[in-house]
Image (cartoon, rainbow, N blue to C red; front, side):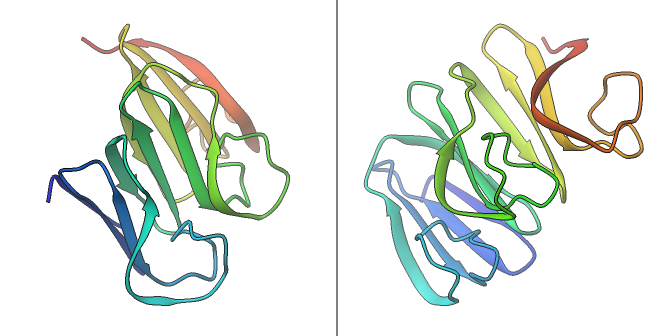
Length: 150
């Protein structure tokens, strides 16, 4: 196993061959199998080419080997950044960031760092957690934060 990502009630394992396997609570779609049913055993979500995965309370994100970012699961505060208006996205959906090297989903927001060191955040921003210098109810798509990561 290459990596393990755990949320409140679900988990995902990234195997050495790049395949991603998820299991647990499926009500929000955090498993990524296209359904809202619980999955008591690991289920193959992507056959290959995943470089990293990370999970939060009820959503999950994965970075493809080329750096494309996809997220799925709860989307009630647009924490998936995929432009979907649905409260849940049941399968991996492209976020629109293509050179991602790190992702960190929070409970209702998500941040990612691209290979150029840029920090991007989106989702719930009621207390300024997206990092743009002001609080808004929601930032629905990735916004560059005025902060550079080395």
